[in-house]
Image (cartoon, rainbow, N blue to C red):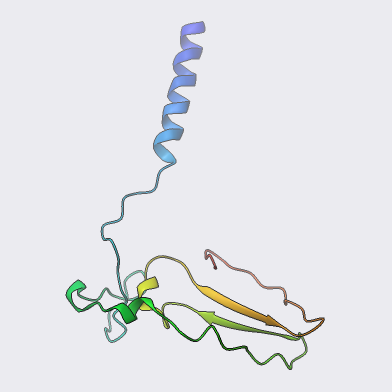
Length: 115
């Protein structure tokens, strides 16, 4: 009986270890080719030989948003449309500016992350 329990416990632990890993990425990076008409998991990938530093930079988050609204807050969102290097990573960035007593309106992030 103890042997069967040990084998069952060992099999369960081994299976959970095998299922708790992410598959290896097929590419180091996939910079979005926003001129392509093909959309695969976001945008199609640019040829790595044509990737430039500007594909990973954005310089607009230093400017405050317009907070003169009911919530007293402004969100400046940055995604793959602004930084092509974020393609296929599932990441976006946001700057939130609050006026005194400003609020963050209720919102959700379905299947997404935000920095």
